Length: 169
Image (cartoon, rainbow, N blue to C red; front, side, top):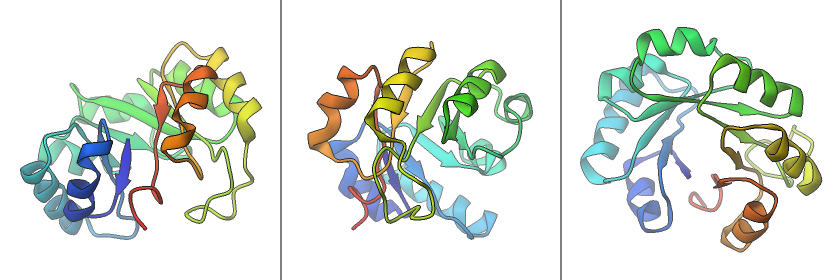
């Protein structure tokens, strides 16, 4: 999954990603909606909108990815009835809670140090394996990962990886 901040980045990532997550922290709902419409018109991959369920519903996105401390999944599903709901998590307890709430997937990390979230301690490969083994929903790894890490992610039971820096220099 490519996590990008613009339609141009989504286009550049389209050949290497299975889905696009639009992440524009601090943007207004209007700016996010405009960019999400641009992504949908230029890229034929599922679009996931970060955090903003209202924008995801407004643009007909495939789903929303909630932050660890974001709205409950039940609230997201009331607004986005037919889309997928994921949650970014940073511990096995949070991952299990997300699964219990009814998330369709979790994004777990950071696995390695990452410039996009330097304040978060890396969880490491062993913890990724523990989380993947504990959950019955897909676990997507994130944090300092690139294409060469995909095989290891899969070996540990993850469904794949998401990346910001890999797609956004």
